[in-house]
Amino acid sequence: MALFLSTYVNKVDKKGRVSVPSRFRSVLTGKGFESIVLFPTVNGDAIDACGMDVMENLLEKIGGFDPLSEDRESYADVLMSDAIELSVDGDGRIMVPLDMLEEAGIEVGGQCAFVGRGDSFQIWNPAAFATRKKMARERTRNRRAAGAKADGGADG
Image (tube, rainbow, N blue to C red; front, side, top):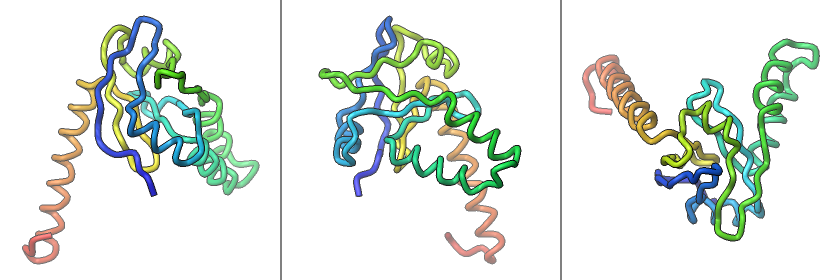
């Protein structure tokens, strides 16, 4: 199974075009996709990106909610209504909507970070992702230390 791994930083041109890392394009084409689905993260601090298979899985999970529940409505509204399917051009680029870039704090003419997340990836402002990654490492260390204390001091 091919996964989206690692972090790549690429330039965003003035029109919002950015080259998708070749490794990520290979994962998508290996799954039979020639497009990418983008939607804002729930926090609005980045852009989620995936193949149509992941979107179908999300829709299936949403479909598992009570059809009349607010949760079902909310998740569908947040995930599906903002999603956009983009074709990858012959040069390996996508044109990200400018409002989506702006909401994620990514400047046109600046850079963005493609961050692998296994079955999907995210597009971040590189400085914002560096901060998030630092906080995530610290949180992970703290949880590991707390778990080691709970296990009687054993190394985890």
